[in-house]
Image (tube, rainbow, N blue to C red):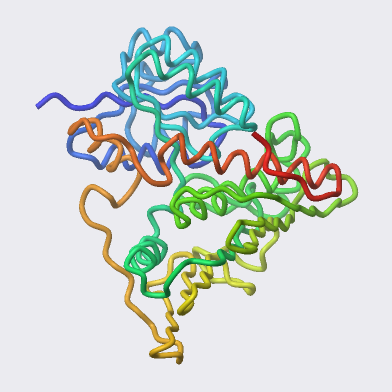
Length: 358
């Protein structure tokens, strides 16, 4: 059987290395080539995965012409997602966009419009969608274990985006400070900031947990640290017809949640009409309260089944079967979440509550 040819486009986001490793480990996929305008950004992944130098390109069109991918992984800065997606659509390839969706709902709509005439698939990958505890929480919610979902509480982040390279290789604090002035993560024009980095997680998975429902109003406050043009801490309140939900993002957690959970705990808490569920990032269980059993009880996290263990495996499975991408990867659902993010950013800038932007 011919393998899916997968090409990596841009190394702005450090998750490219993790995603390429998933491709390399997939029995029905191969890395056809890599593109980045800066050749040096590709070298670490190329060496780690044994990708020959003749598969590395600094010219986009030369890369696409040579590699002819079935799937392009896009890890550009958010402000560049729409431009790249329009260019990729011209080559008739399926597109796997690493979160966030885009830097605005307008750009997200450009991406959807570019892909529609091609008949190809676009998926937006949110790594927290592949965390066993969060998938288990969704199952319990769908089963009605805590009744009607009334509130979603989200707190998430890490020590900061420059502390980690691919495969979570750590960088020293001194190197982090050296990189900040030139990093897109800390530039508004590139889509930097903790709000755009992490609110999309809460808004997207939150919309998934709420079965697609959108809030009526959004209120957001961000920190305003001296000398930094983007936020490192944001708190967003969403008013739904059913009540209030809260989504908080933080660059500067005491520890990284994938090594040692900080306090506050990174993850989700759900309040329903008949109980509560807490789902911490990377936990091997969730905790549940119900009216019948109000004491907090641990429920083991479900093992993710083959085909749904990570975004690459899932999307390649959809391409093989012809099934549409669903849940947090669905661009239509992600567009609702992007509207929440846009409204939160506007609310913070205007320092007032806003109706959900169209």
